[in-house]
Amino acid sequence: MGEPVLLGLDVGTSGVKALLVSPSGEVEDAATTPLALSTPRPGWAEQDPESWWNAAISSMRALQAKRPTATVAAIGISGQMHSSVLLDRSGQVIRPALLWCDGRTTAECAEITERAGGEERLRDWVCNPALEGFTLPKILWLRNREPEAYSRLATVLLAKDFIRFRLTRTIATEPSDASGTLMFDPAHVRWSHELLSAVGVPLTLLPDVGGSADVLGRITPEAAALTGLPAGTPVVGGGADNACGAAGVGAITPGDAVASWGTSGTVLAPTAQPLVDPAMRAHTFCHVAPNLWYLMGVVLSAGGAFSWYREQFARDLAASSDASRLLDEEASGVAPGADGVTFLPYLQGERTPHRDASARGAFLGLSLAHTRAHLTRAVLEGVCFALRDSLSILQELGMAPRHLLLTGGGARSAFLRRLQSEVYGLPVTTVNREEGPAYGAALLAAVGAGVFPDIAAAARATLARAPLEYPDPRAQVSYREPYERFRASYAAARPAARGMDRPASPARADAREATIVQRA
Image 1 (cartoon, rainbow, N blue to C red):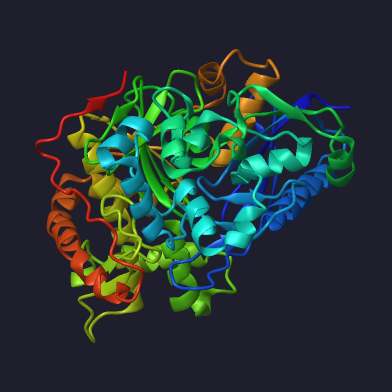
Image 2: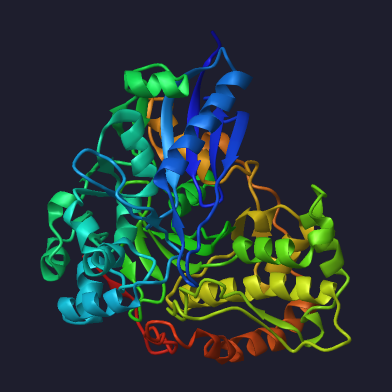
């Protein structure tokens, strides 16, 4: 038998990734099983939790086939945030999960805000506003729209916690993922009894909360037979995908900041205190390390917007494994600003800064002179501009990163790294690992197995940063007008949203007079 390894498992929206990592931090092998997304209506997004479980089994089995002699010391799990798994008393799934990018709960968000007594009360109780993507509005939607299903509801879990349940039969979560439910008080690291009481949701629906690196269950004999892993293998708490992704690139120290492109996109900055944006445009969540929080802005369609564009507008490249690279090359031949073309990436609504689930995507400024290369450049710039909105909010709130760590799809090409550096106006860097949340989950497993004393030590021992890549000052200046054009174009995303439940609450865009609210 070989040296014991750690297994990181990431339950994403587009696939379930399994990763074997050595105690020294080397990636031994990886396997990914793709997932399909169901959109039964515009703005809706669902997946069957059983498909996550089957994909997890498939990915873990694939690793077993590649590394039959590997001994797994511990397992860490990461997963998409907010997505609601609804179980009955026997632990069976009641209905498909409503995902983080599902926007059907606008009325329930208004109901939560009203029952709580206003957004200021929500800021005090859960540090965040009622947004359609969060978990609590989904529970109320089930109660309001599918009462028969709600009558059978016994347990609400998040994506990664459902996989832990199937592996260990343990019903548990940890603070980083619980923070995104709108039922958890990140400042006091506990379920918010105040808000649960206000909306009439019983605490008994929710799992116990343990630490992200604590062992919260062990592989059962039944799960061992399905996965090929030994019964009794410990499974640690793990973390939300964004928190694990940040840990996986070493962004676990105040002063760091990371920009990530997955299906969604984020800009995340750790803090030593639970700081809250007074306008609640940015989120305040617990990190995977104890006594650490982070502020984060979220773009609902980042890599997801580019994937949609590639599938719809570059079908001639579909057979090529280099489709993304070829599109990058096309876009790199177009000048900054895409010759007047602007893309709004609001394909599933938007979180930061607009808080508008009914917003929709758009191309603006098209003419007969424009080519696919212009559209490609506009899509990539649009995602960067949307993330710059989030970065600007963090900067307004006193977060002043000297550079940005890049991870995910936006870190994998020199063109995209340069584009982000020039749009953000900051140097950028990457780390020597590109596996994202699965790698952070594996590091948490290493801590749980006793390989490292804490996640900070794990990051120091396994991660190295590349030299900083600095923006070209002239190119940086050239993005000022296209970015202002992007910001001014948000109204164009609104008419397409008519017919939805109702307009979302407008963002409180002016934060110039805001000061940071610090929760004791």
